[in-house]
Amino acid sequence: MEYYSTNGKAPKATLRKAVVKGLAEDRGLYMPQTIPHLPESFFREIGSLSFRELSYRIADAFFGEDIPADKLKGIVYDTLSFDCPLVEVSPGIYSLELFHGPTLAFKDVGARFMARLLQYFTEEEGHRQVNVLVATSGDTGSAVANGFLGVEGVHVYVLYPKGKVSPIQECQFTTLGRNITAVEVDGVFDDCQAMVKNAFMDSELNDAMKLTSANSINVARFLPQSFYYFWAYTQMRRLGVSKEIVACTPSGNFGNICAGLFGKRMGLPVKRFIAANNANSVFYEFLRDGEYRPRPSVRTIANAMDVGDPSNFARIWDLYGKSHEAVCRDISGVTYSDAQIEETIRDVYRQRGYLCDPHGACGYRALKEGLRESEAGFFCETAHPAKFKDTVERIIGEEVAVPPKLAAFMKGEKKSVPMSREFTDFKNYLLDR
Ligand SMILES: *Cc1c(COP(=O)(O)O)cnc(C)c1O
Image (cartoon, rainbow, N blue to C red; front, side, top):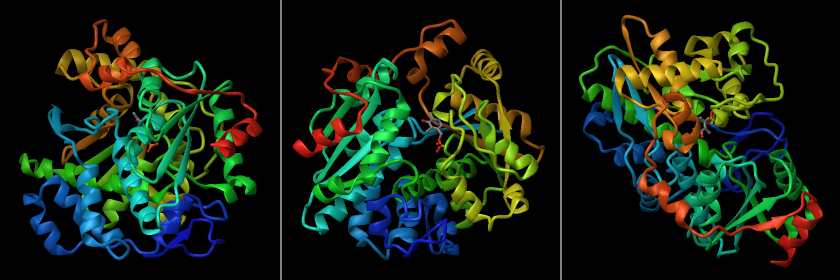
């Protein structure tokens, strides 16, 4: 399969190039040349397939030409070494729990898949080490670090702003060791991101070492997220839900919902999608009047969605042929204030006994307010509520138990490399390694 750039000014790329480079030369995002429609036989069998088998069939449709079947199956099965259960929260509203992976958030799926794919490509190329640079304000760094942990031929540098990530998040990437190096930058998130961008543009550094990025612009990170939309659909049908199905995704950079939209294009019978936003409502406003007006993000309690210029907007725009009307046929939007998110967490917990995290709460509320009589829906519960322990405890007035997986990180020894926010310091550090 070939990949083209959403900006249309870069040459087509192979899967290998799209994964290893991340972004196209013209700064556009890579898109698969064709989106395969899954065969009738797949949809006849879907009800009897395991999560892993179902996911492998989807992966095969995209990556089967480029990766031998046994390797690809190994990559998919290794990625999905945990469950994604579907839980009924209130009549007709289901939570797709995507937080049973190593760092208790949905990003584990894409990060692990990408790590295994990169490993496959480096093995093929004779083991020249690839270095992944990732700037994080918390969640991405932990998912990427854990996804790549122990993967041969790949070294990960996680750059994070000193004193600005939560203690739980920090220990999820500073205690790992092995092929993961945490770099504690004396600055803010934007400094970390600028250092990573400078590194990709520095020719001396790129001649000396192979560098790549692991955020959701990478096709290997966002596409695998389509697997669990099919899984949610299947589970709802197995539970006897016969209404039309609506999918709702709490969205920041729009990588997750974009994968769901790809699923629909592949034949997934989801009727429509809802993009749930916090106060960062650029996409919501775009749906309303067709104008895309990116702006700086504002801080909210659902902070993994504090994004003012969603990077995957370009993919959605391209997928719908740059037609506002076409986008609006499949997707509607909502935006919620922190007060509304808090109210939702409290009400769902008291009335239903289900504890949402601040992101999932936006998804639940959107379905509660938006489902029609003929519809049932699921929302992506994108993180375990204990990842936002302080916020959630304040809202419900009760202690939130920390799952053993999370507690284990907190016992590890924290190790990081102190760094100024000057790019030359970081560059010299890399060159000396
Ligand atoms: C990253 C993240 C999101 C947003 O996902 P996008 O793919 O960026 O839209 C939502 N919730 C949580 C908990 C996240 O970590």
